[in-house]
Structures are given as C-alpha cells and as structure tokens.
Amino acid sequence: MAEEPLYPIAVLIDELKNDDIQLRLNSIRRLSTIARALGEERTRRELIPFLNENNDDDDEVLLAMAEELGVFIPYVGGVEYASVLLPPLETLCTVEETCVRDKAVESLCRIGSQMRESDLVEYFIPLVKRLAAGEWFTARVSACGLFHIAYPSAPETSKTELRSIYSQLCQDDMPMVRRSAASNLGKFAATVEYAHLKADVMSIFEDLTQDDQDSVRLLAVEGCAALGKLLEPPDCVAHILPVIVNFSQDKSWRVRYMVANQLYELCEAVGPEPTRTELVPAYVRLLRDNEAEVRIAAAGKVTKFCRILNPDLSIQHILPCVKELSSDSSQHVRSALASVIMGMAPVLGKEATFEQLLPIFLSLLKDEFPDVRLNIISKLDQVNQVIGIDLLSQSLLPAIVELAEDRHWRVRLAIIEYIPLLASQLGVGFFDDKLGALCMQWLQDKVHSIREAAANNLKRLAEEFGPEWAMQHIIPQVLEMSSNSHYLYRMTILRAISLLAPVMGSEITCSNLLPVVVAASKDRVPNIKFNVAKVLESIFPIVDQSVVEKTIRPCLVELSEDPDVDVRFFSNQALQAIDHVMMSS
Image 1 (tube, rainbow, N blue to C red):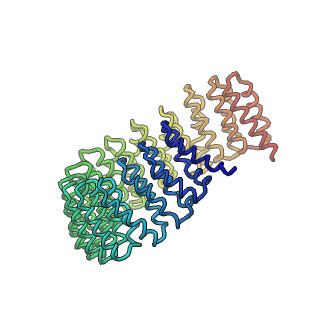
Image 2 (cartoon, rainbow, N blue to C red):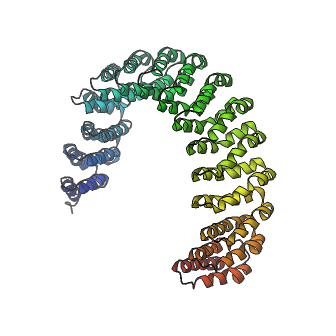
Image 3 (cartoon, rainbow, N blue to C red):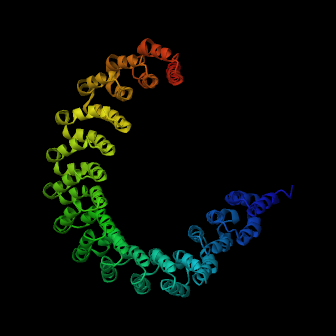
C-alpha cells in the first residue's frame, strides 16, 4: 500500500515524455490531482523540480503548465512555500512563444501578490533582476511585467535599483523590450512614490515618447492617460499635456489613432482651462485627420468629449467637424459617428439639437450604407428625450416609414424593434394613422427574422395600448391573414396568435383566436399542423378547463394520429402537458 502514491508521478513522468502531445497535455492539466495524491512535501521535493527540468518544446504544453502553476500555492503547502513555484515559471518567462511568456508573467504576478514580504525580498526581487539582466530579449520583455509586484515590498536601496533597471529596459536595444516597458509603465508608476514619480518615472516616460519606433510611441500614449491620473493637475499640465499635443500631430497614424482613443480621459486630469486651450484644438485636428482610421476613432469619442466640455464650446468647435464627418468619404467614419451622435442631444440641449443636430441625423438616416442607418435608428430615444415627440415626428417619421421598407432586412428589423418605444411616445391616435399598416405589412415579409419580430411587435403593442385597442386594430387583420395561400405566412399568424393570447385574455382567445387555430389543424402542410399543437400547448393554461376538454383535447387527439411523425410528436407532447397540469390541480 505504501507504494501506491508513487503511481501518479510515474504516470505523469511517462506521459510527459510521451511522443503524443495530447497525452502530455492531459498530464499537465491533471497536475493538481497528481499534487494532491503526492501530498505537499513530495510535490515540493519531487514534482516541482521535475517540472523545472522538463524541457518540453511544445508551446501548448508549456502554456498549460504556466497556467496550472499560477494556482498551485495550496498544493505546495500554502503561502510560506510559494517561492518553490518561482523557478519553473522563471524558465517559462524566457521561452520564445509570446502567449507562454504572458501566461507565466500573469502566474508570477498572482503568486507574488500572495507571497510574504520577506519572501518577496529574498526570492521574487532577485528573480526580477535576473530576468531584467537576461541575455536573451524574451527574459527582459517578461521582467517588465513584474516590477509592479516587486517594487512595493522592496527595501529603499532595492527600490532605487529597480527604478534604475526599469529605466535601462526603456532604453533597451530591442524594440520588443521597449514596447513591454512602455505598456507596463502605468502599472509600475502606480506603485512608485510621488517624489520619484515626478523625477524618475517622468524622465523614463519622456524617453519613450521620443522613441524612433511608432509601436513604442503608441504604447506610450496609453501611459499618458495612466500617468495623467496619478499626477496632480499642475504636474499633468507641465509634463503630459505637451506630449499628448505633440502625439496628436505624430507622423505615424497609429500613434494619432491611440491619441484619438485616449484624449477624453486626459481632459479630466488636466482641468477645464488647458482642455479648452490645448486639447480641443488637438481633438479638432484628429477629427479632420487625413487617415480614415484616425477619424473613426475620434468620431467614436465625440459624445464623451462633448460631455466634458460646456455646450458653447461643443457648438463652436466640435459641431462643425461633426457636420463634415456626416458626409465623410469613408462609410466607416459615418457609421462610427452615427453610433454616438445621438448622445450629443442631451449635452447640447433642445434648441441646438433641433437647429444643428437634427439635419445631421436626417442626412445619416438616408445614408446609402445600412450600418449608418441602423446606428441612428437604435439611439432615437435619446433625441426624443430632448426635443419632444412633436418635433421628432414631424422631422423623423417620414424617414422611419421609408426605412421600414428598406432593402436591407437588418435595417427593417431595427425599425420593428424600435416601434413599441415609438408607439408609447407617439400615442395611440398618431400610431394608428402613420404606423399601424406597416406593422401588418411586416407579417408577410420575405425574411423569417422580420416575420418573427413582427409577431413579437404585435404582442408588445397590445400590451402598450390594451386588449380593446388590439381587438379593434390587430385581431381582425391577423385573422384575415390566416387563410393566406403561402404556408410560411400562415405559420407566422399561428406564432402571432400564441403571443397575443396571454395579452388578450381567456374570453377573446376562446371566441376569436381558438377557432382559427383549430381550423388550421386541418391544414394540408405538416409544419402548420405541428405548430398548431405547439400553440394549443401554449394557450391551454389561459382558457377554462371545459374548453380544454371540449375543443383543445379532441383536436390534439386527432393530430396525434396524423401520418407525419413530427405532428404526432408535438401533439402527444401537448397532451402530456395538459394531463400533467390536470393531475397536479
């Protein structure tokens, strides 16, 4: 019996050396099971050293190992023994495959954040220094992601050394190392004391912003936002603002693209006056950039930017650019603008929205590119809150009616989904005049998703305006369509009946809807008949038991003897549901 615990480690070693990659992967993913079988001491003494020596060359196996080791602290005896996990992860930090290194760094951060301070000083900080001094660039790349864990626990002398090492990594010969240092600068800076942040970290940051590689500079842009939040406003204005203004005119469009994405975050950090004098002109330049990708990024942030400014500044500086972008040569720029422009209405107020924004909405609603039209439709409620339904209906309703017959079915779908909201805002009288006919027309659309949405739409309208209105305006027209020559349209009507029945109540369901469903059970198309069974199953809880016994059950019994297997299946399923309810009641 004493030999039994040896078995799992023997299997692991065999499988880890197996030629079959799947076996090697499976054994790595079972590491926690094997560690439990071995016990904490033998895991520390045998399993971890074995993993450290394992020189598997398959990235998938190494990735799995890096992931497993990150949650391994409980299996080696808890936090006091966490340091034994560092050597295998240190090795994984030096491999060539990026995703393996990233996972190893992530696991090291997870372990380091749980380690005792004395162990961090004794084991973790030396590990960071070794990686930072690594001969091969992969080790130095990985080191950059560990400084924010090592720094807070380091003694004062080590802190000075760590800042100096990070500074050297930012000036490394390899662009990949400088990129990693730039992308991790924000996390490292957040742990550094304010005095050193202003002196050491800002000089590191300035070096990165002048890097000759645009891939390093664009990561430094992300650092602008992170550092801006850490610095006091006057320091932010002195150190970050000039950098971001220069970046907004960088020769690389990728850098300008990053600035367009990050700029509004900096407005809060620098305060209102520098925003007005420096950042607004920079943002206007980006909105008029000659690269479409930069304009897309800037257009997508236009509402967020306007929220930070006062309405007058927005109208004076941003609105002229928005007008230009609404007729931009790139459909993707117009689409990005359409997705956010509605959010400007509450910022600008009623008068400016009606005079300045509404013409832009209307031109985007008539855009030839369906995504632009879709993006406008989906946000119409934001405008309604500002300008009111009278103005909205006069200016936008003709465009909505036109879009209801759009050749792109996704546009028609977006309009249908917006109809109940529009109905609640327009009121019943206006709705009947302008939009009632459209709602019926959609039940006979060529696209199934439109017909399905149209049936759902009728239910939501009945809920909004009440059963009496529905009885007058919806039910007669729905029942009229039940004899349509095309079976797909007859199926849509059955779907509409099943959705309307709970809203209409027992009396109308029994007198008006149920006879149509029972009549459809005689249809020649099996698809109609098994849908009848489904509808009867959904509406029997609404009606009296006498109606179930007199009308619904006989209909289902007849369908359960149908030649078609699907019809028999669904009718029997409905009968079982009825029996189950009867028995339980």
